[in-house]
Length: 262
Image (tube, rainbow, N blue to C red; front, side):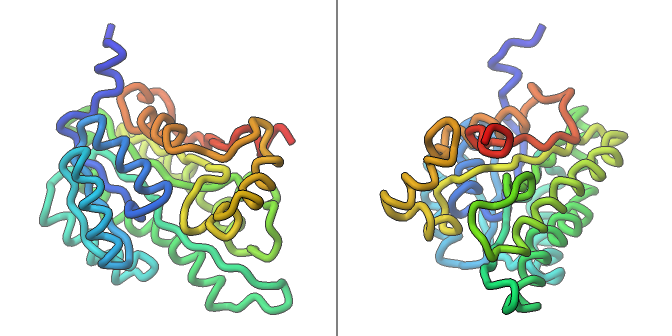
């Protein structure tokens, strides 16, 4: 029988976290580093990438490069850079995302496309581009991991109005996760999604950036609070580790009960 420590150990593993410079992505990258993995992160802004690399380096070996994953060219360039850094990827966390708000009568096509391209399209095509490295790692270790970041807004009608593309994109992420999980099971690669509720990030700053807004959001959560970094680190650590060998195709709400207990 494997010890609990070994079940969660990622020493010697290689992980990739998109959107890993802030918010949920940085939380996940922190946890993976603490488990012993070396981590590659990317996001669009060079200054944010540099600052995040400096912060995360306190926890382990982290490499970073700016990339715009909302375009296929940007995704392919990131995949090419990764191929020059490593032959195998044990863990891929597809976290990069965007949102857009506008009234139904005024919602723009370019806003819709921006959200769908980054939140859905980039997950599929980056995974496709990195598949040889994911397969190489799973062949060597007997397992591989893909973790897609969805949202409770893909499971339940959002609290906020006028964000039509975002919940639609996250519902698509959830279903894509299941479809990919069936195909990649033959490669011993599990594919699961985390559907977070409210966590502090730049994307949620408009709602959580002040005590009144934070209290108002927390009032809708059965557990009475927003998500904390340890909540995200704990679940992603499980899904990235050998402890989750028999878990695939799952959409796991990390929301304090919001989606199912209201």
